[in-house]
Amino acid sequence: MELAALCTDAGVASRVTGATAGVDVVDIAYRSERCGPGSLFCCLPGGNADGHDFAPAAVANGAVALLVERELPDLGVPQILCDDAREGMARLAASLYGHPSRELALVGVTGTNGKTTTTLLLAAMLDAAQRPCGLLGTVERRIGGRREAAGLTTPEAPDLQRSLRSMIEAGDEACAMEASSIAIAQRRLVATEFAAVGFTNLSQDHLDFHRDLEDYFAAKASLFDGRFPRAVNADDAYGARLGAELRFGVESPSADVRCEAYELRPDRTELFVRTPQGALSLEPRLRGRFNVDNVLCAVTLALLLEVPLGAIEHAVAATGAPPGRFEPVETGRGFGVIVDYAHTPAGIAAVLASARPLTDGRLLCVFGAGGDRDHAKRPLMGSAAEVGADRLYVTSDNSRSESTDVIVAQILEGLERASEALVEHDRRRAIARALADAEDGDLVLILGKGHEQGQDIGGVVEPFDDRTVAQELLE
Image 1 (tube, rainbow, N blue to C red):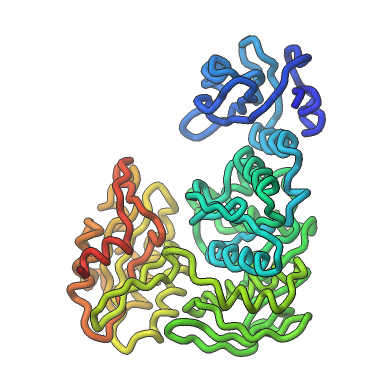
Image 2 (cartoon, rainbow, N blue to C red):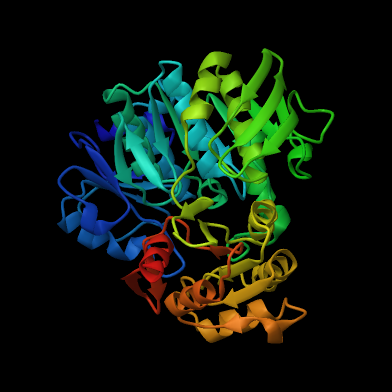
């Protein structure tokens, strides 16, 4: 696309230095090593590095223009000046790829917990309605039915717009996408249009990035300003503060989509749901009370997209849980093992509460907390685990650049009976100890990493999958 036309379409044409005539842009990059002939390089300021410092390398690699927040010395290519390079990048990316969100039924799901399961269910509902659906989220990216490994939960703007365009070219008519608060705050979704947005819940998380819980909520709430049809959890205190076309819930009398009865079984859940379009009898292959809310959110979003009730029922019955979400590990023993991604105080509490009815014995809980992330939630995670479990095994997670000693000490601050918790920094040995301690009728929960297949300790990522490790130890 010709640079001048691209800038005009994106609304960033007012401050361009250098000649734009004859300059064609074929790609947008935010890392200099990814630039090639015809790239527009976006100089993004960051906490550890400033993209402006990499502009010469980008030009050397073939960049034909730069998006900057401050004018740089002449590098022989046009410079587009803007106050917010991230917003400018999002607008330029949407324009370069032909505004694909206007052609897809794009659905964004946000909230602290439940986004992955909700988007997976919604994609299945749209597929069942003969509306092929792509997927962008924490566990996988799906384009035209082809599955790929996921990167960021919500991709950077150029990657997002490129993926959406690829979906259209591959025959997808819709896309279910997880929308993280960080992505929203970083303006990755600017110039993206949604057919509907959904809100699952909100509890403490990501306060290493957001100033406080209100700032965290404000980021998510910005998607619910009335621009797009909204599905909101009426049972959640923060959801109750949002406007919506349809509300869902179990307890709230204001819910338009309401679960009037449910039964939690060892291998599935049975729900009876009232909707404005009629009643639904659902049998999801999902366990746990928290998954009732996830099913309701997906159902409500599907109704906003006019998915028939029959397609909803079929998809719910056929869809299993995402990898690492309340996933059982075959033990061949008299006790059970479940792996889950729960890594927030509310997530841990919800998983333990859902696990309690599944066993007549004890709940043994293995967990840690990620490094370089919200410190304040660590003692709260410890407290939630102590309330819900019978025995705790506090260990490492992805400690990244932080000391595991420090992280574990902060978790223990939240325990009233810290001396009773077993502390084992080596995660494999912690899992081994819990499995060795388990007796007939017990249930071992391994929390925090879920589907992840690596562990970051000191900046070195080693292969580590809780499910594989548990299976190896059992064998």
